[in-house]
Amino acid sequence: MQQNQSNRSAIIIIAILFFVFGFVTWLNGPLITYVKLAFGLDTDSKAFMVTTAFYMAYFFLALPSSWILEKTGMKKGMALGLLVMAVGTFLFGQYATHRNYAMSLTGLFVIGSGLSLLQTASNPYISIIGPIESAAQRISIVGICNKVAGIISPIVLSAFVLKGINHLEEKVNAATDQSAKDAILNDFASKVYLPYVIMAIALVIIAFWVTKSSLPEIKASEMNKQADAGEEVKQKNSLFSFPHLWLGALCIFVYVGVEVMAGDAIGTYGKGFHIPTDETKYFTSYTLAAMLLGYIIGLFTIPKIMSQQTALKYSAVLGILFTIAAFLTKGYISVAFVAALGLANALMWPAIFPLAISGLGKFTEKGSAILIMGIAGGALIPKAFAILKESYGFQLVFFALMIPCYLYILYYAISGHKAGLVKKS
Image (cartoon, rainbow, N blue to C red; front, side, top):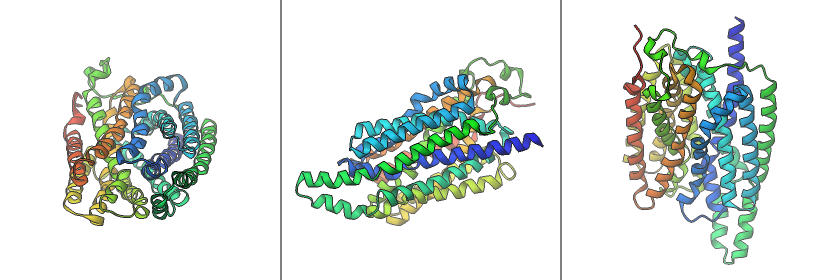
């Protein structure tokens, strides 16, 4: 009874952390719109450096994060991650106000670095604090908090920073003098300062709260043992002995790529149909609302009605169907199908992560870091979209990038997650 109460308290605390990094992460969609105007960027490819800088931090910092966590423990590591995020949000707010794009991107990289540490700790924590077979259900619980934050954050940024952006774009285009144009853009850029300073302060407060909280310290390698597996599994002595982990890392890579395409790139996709910026700035929230619905479905169906791998299989098929529908339609209907990809994507992370770390035992921390590195898919796949759409039709590029990703996720759901694992007798 006491153990169950402890687990419930831990889930609540982790859920709050998922809300925090959901709020920060899903600001990237409207930030693409913000930086393109504020910094006078002439192509979407340059504006998509927002996602590149943010998500590449996971690739470079995930393994160092696992080493840090071995020294600090998961609880202190989470608090440290929040403090690093606070530094990054302050840097972004400071340099974006002065329209220094390179240093603003550095701030986003620092935020991503803090999130890398936070996610390297929190994802395996929530996966193994209870039975691994029901991990997707627990991830769905904290994922709901993450996506609620994702719905709110674009609305908040749009209200405080992007309000009246259509009129502002007209003023900038109408300005005949460069100094007048700079004055308009300087005023616009400065609007981001206060929200980011407030976020930095909030992150420091939450970091202090985590260190003083009742969150129990756990040892991932001890809790994620496959006790009834054969001796062959128990005696594996290298991460390379677990092919399902590496296939899972690639699955995370393509999954995060399609998630960011549906969430952050949807505004750019909508502008391809000449939909006004005052409307496209909210599109990320629609995708996140669809993801929220998916998490709620997962909460009530996994593992009672369907297994994690079955949920992943259905999700991949749904992603393929929605992508085809988006390609075959136009305007708001096509955008609606892109937003509906949020529903298809919702249960993918909750399923992929526990399937990929299953049975890793003493390699759980390092294995989790390898999976977190896969989040770099959010840097590269949307960037490829932004570059290729300058030469080819944006709908064709979207289709050509998304379909192979969903096909690979389908493969992992059917057989990839079992690669190299010994069947239980």
